[in-house]
Length: 220
Ligand SMILES: [Mg+2]
Image (cartoon, rainbow, N blue to C red; front, side, top):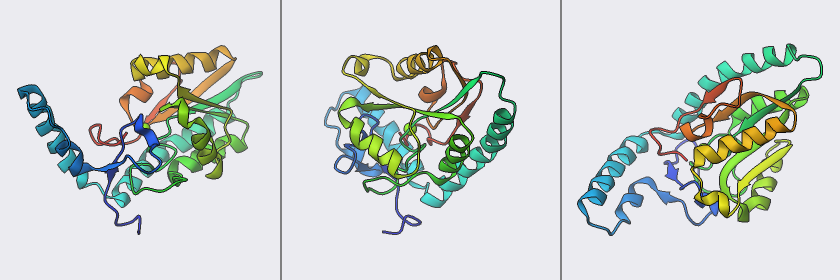
């Protein structure tokens, strides 16, 4: 399948990835799986269907273009910030995984390909002494395939945070914020936090955030 023409597919975050192959559902099909017919769920289903319809218009090339635009801001910042490293400072960058470092919303394959504009920033950083940390809502059960996938695509992992059972009950933004605080407690300065969902980026503990597109929550 040519990625240039493939239609966007959605995977719920945790799903992650079981992601790996089985659970991604075509955008249009997901709303249709709801069987609850309460007014609230009907409204939610209609809203989801509308959002999905909007998101279906986003093709791979557009998504890449949108990602490139954001990374065109990130790259010069990262270069400048690395050049201005303070004595004794240990720099880190924190990344989300799905639809940030890896392409998981477009087509299904394992290992998932790297999101190229983000990989370029990551490679520059790791080649210049910055440690890369990956904070994902993916569940712990897929730690190893996730680690393998990232390394396979060229990311050097200093830390990979997945959600343990107890974390699954925590708000995603709070969970991700807690991991950044943990990274800081190891003596790192987080110079940038890069993700595609608002929940990747809220809560502080980073000098700067870069928001890739999620198209109104349709891209996990
Ligand atoms: Mg994501």
